[in-house]
Length: 327
Image (tube, rainbow, N blue to C red; front, side):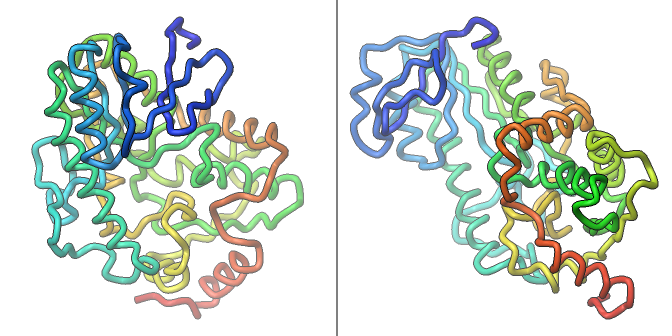
């Protein structure tokens, strides 16, 4: 909208999410009549049900100039290349994988497989659209308005430490040199609009920030965003075995930038094709500052991700004393 686009949102409720947005009442599983007779320059879809995606894509053929679809990096097979890219092996329905062998929360592996297979089938269903289709395979999405708080937890936790509201010894996941990747949703949205305007046709891996950064560098950026400097907090790095043993009951969405190393290739994605096509990523410091300002602006509610103080302190203590699992 800031770029001058007229935005229409199709949803079951028919409610406009923001002022200035046109809204259509559309049931993706049923009545699509709200889309009939309408013409758009482009459409962007995030739905996961393959049949619903195919029906909408077919209905909009001839009425939309270009179609974009937001898929996910988890579609790549976990036993495939360490750095996957479009064309590499993907998951298939009914097959077993070797991910998360140390425990990943109740049913986590099955849910991931189910979601990923659905996304792949939805990608295939886009063949119903007679025109250019750009598929964006995204990773961990962060930024202002992210309800998961997986990234937000870090600048907020560090700001509380600097304000004396929480311990300055901060639990950090895994190896500080481990590469970590994520995407600011605003950057993905900008690239989606660019791809649609250019009429791109194909699949793009879109995981930032262009190249993987050490986790320690991302956390240092969050510390700077909170007003701190190196040395203002002490990082307590918990090893992979301790995290698996102690946090296996924590849902995937509640883990602040930690996933088992053998689960999915979130931390080893080559987005060079998308970068060459115009994708741009903002620095971690900018994202961290913006999410902290957004969190404060919403009244600083309890975070959906991370550990409570008592549980964090207990794991820090046991890692320091050698009583946490080491493998």
